[in-house]
Length: 87
Image (tube, rainbow, N blue to C red; front, side, top):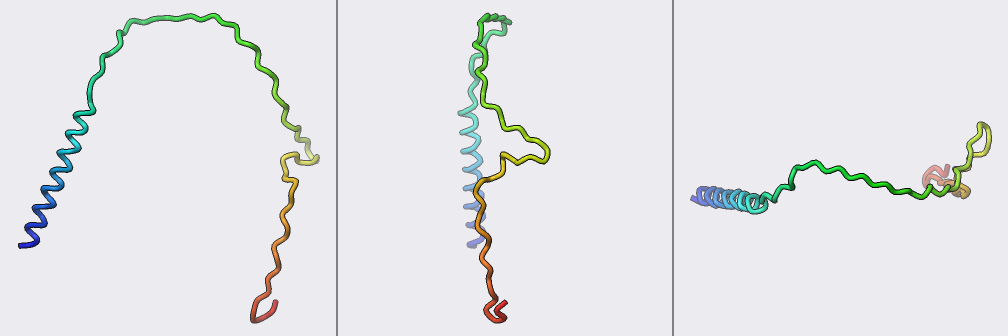
């Protein structure tokens, strides 16, 4: 008896969820007025200011120093010893 009641409650809850989704979808789906489809051409003539120069990236030369390498070097990892063997 309990399983039949559980199935019915599940069916009612699922149906209510589907109905709620349909109602929300339908209420949000409104058609807006379409803009008239007449082709319009606009022409703008403006003089843009020339782009200002930016700093140049450092040059990479074969065999030369790498300007992108880090300047700070991390300390080496500590050497650990095994508690039983000591090495």
